[in-house]
Length: 86
Ligand code: FES
Image (cartoon, rainbow, N blue to C red):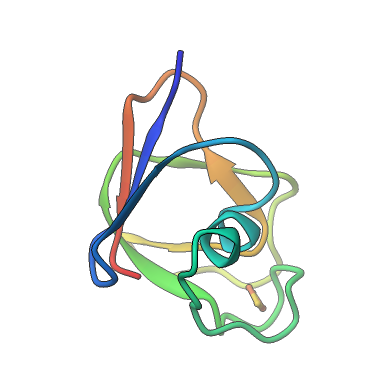
């Protein structure tokens, strides 16, 4: 099933394909902040507005409640929409 990804702040919507959410954002012209691109620094921490994510590996940096790291995650299997504040 396809997953709609909504970058609310940038007003961009796209159907999920592959990679990390950070890579997917960049492919779609959205440029979130980033640093390590490996789940360690927290620079890509973004507020989650709808849906959920799955981490490729448990990240070293723990995001705040209701926030996610974009560099090391993808939309969770089975959701219809992922909406983030990017
Ligand atoms: S860019 Fe460092 S945790 Fe995502």
